Length: 264
Image (cartoon, rainbow, N blue to C red; front, top):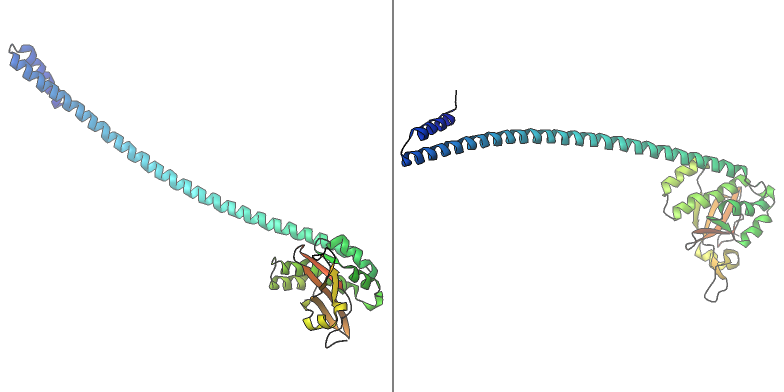
């Protein structure tokens, strides 16, 4: 059994072998070459179809692999997100536990007498809050019977951490209130000292702090104060300023209420 073109080639070969005519031989060779060309063309077409089929199969496999890779990538990203979320949660817990431990140490080291407060402030808050010499002198003169030491220490700690974070924009007012509720079991009220009071009683409201153009300390007002209670209950006032350059709260007067235009 022979294919048609192959049979034609054999036929033309037979003609060539039997022929004595030059023209007939040439014609038979031409027909033979054409049949050979057709056979090669058919073979090429078959190969091209096989290549196309293989290319289609490869393309389908690539698409399938790409989809699987995307699916795996999405799964991997989801797992990575879950892992990062868990890491973040654990880190927050670790930070919270460290803060709790730090605060317990801070509570254990809290002073029991007013005269020990300046050293406590220097040891634990010097990068956030400092006492001016005037504040140190004032607090050291206060008898322990005249002040609630726990409230005083809570107030100083609040100014050094929560209120300073609020000034720097690290925490907002709502966050501060939530922290105060859990940490101190009470809110704290901080406001302006009042320009009229500062002008009327400059000696009480001003401290020498920093340096002016001459290189000498200049007088600056204690324009803010923390207030707790009144004359009848847990009266406490802490007057301070905020050093924007050093990002420090500078306490200049405590724990008594300074005179104002309405209070003497």
